[in-house]
Image (cartoon, rainbow, N blue to C red; front, side, top):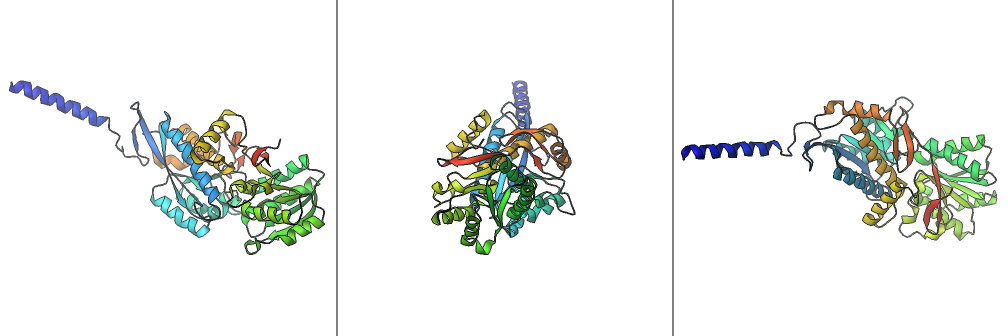
Length: 400
């Protein structure tokens, strides 16, 4: 009887040890790993981001956070060995707060990043990502200072959105094709790196394309962003029937209202910073009817990827996703593709992560919501085709 009890106890120990061998504990790599439902080992990568989740620009940060979370949830629910732990800090689109947000993200163990949502915040921490060798790709920070300066290329900093110079060139090229007979005025924010960057390249390309720019001195600053009577009167007096607004949607909404109040009704044309104007609280969206904007994403596109993303976003958040959301969704999937192709798994040596993912982005091609056959230059700039949308009956529709 004693022998039988000893045999039974031995069997129980063996079974207990076997059960311990299948646990989901951390095996020691930086990412942390566990078991999938099928028992295959997985690795969890910590994905950070900062952006405005409060303040005037929160519509951008919320869009990035919401869409990134959709992508993370999809990947984590899939059969992929690579999972994400996503966390985001509020930087209020403020450079000083972005530095504090970076420190918090770093302390949380961020391994890869969606960088920052806005350009000013990103410029403040671009060198931090470079020095700490954390790969970062911004959905929407379009200033070149996020990826390179006159003195340095930040090798691991990339952009999913168009850079400011590319937006200026693309806007002028589009107008040369579709609005060649228009008289053009420009109103821009001279103390904003985003707006002034687009403006400078637009003016140069407009001259090269022989566009008829009749007024280009419509500069304003943060201190004068509430009264645009001088700029609008000058544009109207010059006979401008198209007004280019390379600015964010908040001052643009004021311009549209003041133009309407004075009976001035040109065609208005913006770039990606205009995206979000239809969700601005208190804004009469009828004033934006006929507004054009250059964007890599059209929510009414009929491909399955766009339809599924828009449907999921609308069901979760009750509104149509903007370009910032689409770019964020693409960022997560592009990072996932790079991690997968770099061989990241439960046994991966995370000391190689930075170099491996940079090498992937310098060589890979990516298809997403915001473009097909996307590639990246070594300076971090993306190459993809822009699209134009026009606001019709209160929604974005393709202009082509």
